[in-house]
Amino acid sequence: MKMNVHIIMGLNEDSLGPAKYLQRRHEVVYILDNKIKGVKKRRDFTFVDPAFVDAIDHTLFKVYIYEPPYKNARILRGSKSFILERRETREDDET
Image 1 (cartoon, rainbow, N blue to C red):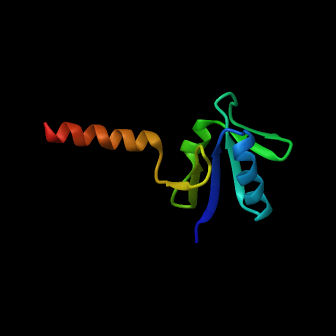
Image 2 (cartoon, rainbow, N blue to C red; image 1 turned 120 degrees about the vertical axis):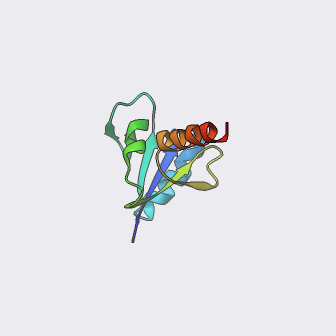
């Protein structure tokens, strides 16, 4: 069974509601902030950098990404760098 991890892109008035709702349900919630290096706990939320999100093991965790307007989440499958590497190899194979 995979554990759910919720990544919210930026903390603002629109994202505050879903973040608090998920925390009340005892879900793991991280706020992505490009200004942070590593992981920082501030008040009620844990802020992380993009490198932390890329390092999450997708075989152990089911990662949901929330982007504006924060109504729906999408499942993150694999790291972004892995997806870019795969696309580059496909383009090379076609030519």
